[in-house]
Length: 111
Image (spheres, one colour):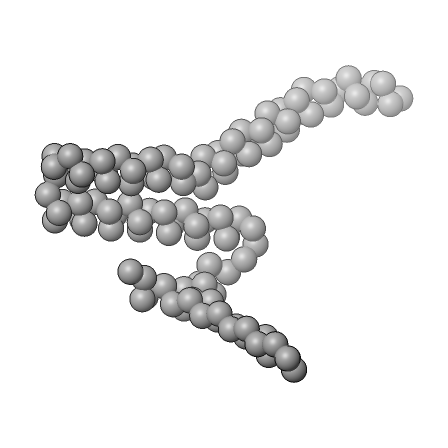
């Protein structure tokens, strides 16, 4: 009976495999920020060789950085996290006797 079941459901199993593979590839492309980083590097080369002005550079850089942040939000969402929790920045501290550490990051103060 198992052989007959396997033969009957083989087309559906193959279809599921194809769909899972397509979903995986789509998620990888949706969360890939490498092309955006390449655009940022190309933009830096353009400003250095004088083919664009400082104003054009700043506008394009801001747009690329917004897209990179959006990709980071997507990665957090896919990992099951809350991307809005990171909007206010990261802060924390660990203070015990004989040691002390503190970290604070505020994305609104990026330089």
